Image (tube, rainbow, N blue to C red):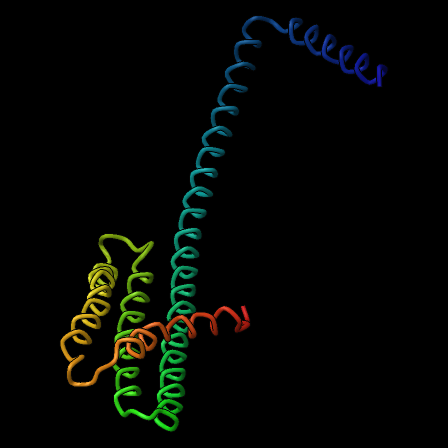
Length: 195
């Protein structure tokens, strides 16, 4: 290893001696040629790196857009499955209550609560879809507005159950119907998705 460094040092000294042996005119001519070559190579390198940077930006923006669209499509499919699970559990529990309940108002109260829970979940899925969107995207702005109104369905449930309580609407089945979306979210958590 030491021999290598000594050899490089000797070659460097030899090159400096040969360069100093040239006449001053030839040295300046040689330096100007070297500077021109260096500048030309430098500008070519700059052009090359500018082109590489532009290409990387184009690829990353198109890849980012396609990846975002792909992820959004996956989310919409899963949100559709989530809403379908809510409907499935609601119909299943409504049918069970209809068959085994002594009062007609128990399954009706449950179905009213389940409908409000479905509307709440739809608003929640639209709100989550709008997260990460840009301000300029029209769909994101509309979905965010719909998502904020999701709490109105919970308030509507309590107001209507309180108002029609005298007619026979029951509080507990309506509230349990509203929280049917929790069964659907548990079902989604236990389901395996192929990625």
